[in-house]
Length: 222
Figure 1 (cartoon, rainbow, N blue to C red):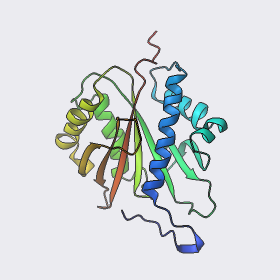
Figure 2 (cartoon, rainbow, N blue to C red):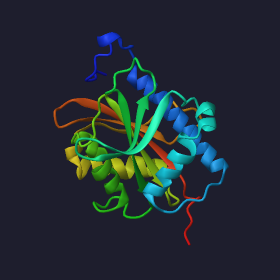
Figure 3 (spheres, helix red, strand yellow):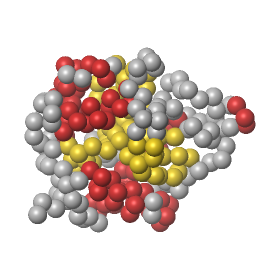
Figure 4 (cartoon, rainbow, N blue to C red):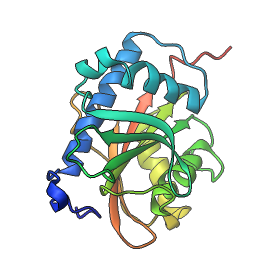
């Protein structure tokens, strides 16, 4: 996939940005599995779930070494031109262009109002996917991701294929979807990761990965 960056300029190293991002997402998935092993207790709040993932795992040096994430920095609520991103991922390699970074947007998903235009599936698209399409968030490397925090028991595959894809096809055509969410296989032993393809408002194509983290048993409902 083409990107807006020319990594050969100014002595910068050439990078396969898609392959590199898949490596990052594998590490983030490993952090998720550690969270489950730790039986971490979470509030049903998108930002607080993100903060625990970011502060206690992605930015813990011991875990970063264990999960092969030591070569990246993770920051939250970083300003973009029009908004603030949930997680911004930058390279620690000084020979990588400063505009080479990835963005992850995090959204909760529940088992209600699956096909409604005001449910959390719709919010996942309108306040997530479309932010990349509209260039509210940049896609300098041609690839970014979303993490769905699943806070209630559901059939995740069905929700993706039958509901989120339905909404993209019939209610959110402004997302310029050229490939609806399909299961990916680059993270071993994790069946709930997907990818979709879209064109932004300048008709430039990009890929979004979608990781569905099932925290339904970890939510404190009191």
